[in-house]
Image (cartoon, rainbow, N blue to C red):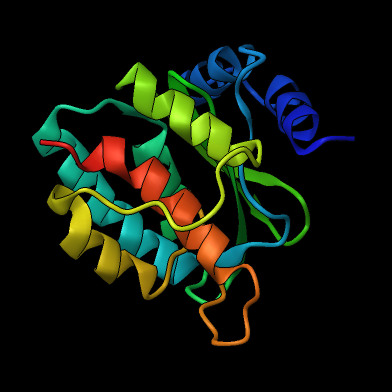
Length: 185
């Protein structure tokens, strides 16, 4: 079963929530595809710190990030060393980050609609393997990208940041592509 179908099934089984409805709506678009590598995870404590910063920024920038508050609440209820798997999904007009615990339960989703269609097309091409190499961040997000890359590499903040991580460049590229629309002011 594909990562996308696994997420859709989990969202349909769970109680109706605003963040679940938003994620299902975005995933209904056939152009929204899995844009990461399985097993990209980080601790709940690190993700909590990252997503608190992203919440502040998204509110300042007027970006509606469906499910981010609920994700923060869910992460805060867990021990800081709990490993959370993160799966990014990208499309030309929307992105979804799915968060899973070690037992395979959906912890939450963050969905962002809208943005620059051309940038979304480039991000989708990258996710489909049509664009290889590091995606250079815009100057507006350089500082936050550097800060976040210390603990986060794929599109929604998860990476095991070690020098022997063979997917590090690809994960950072996907992260830069996803972060850029969120960080535009």
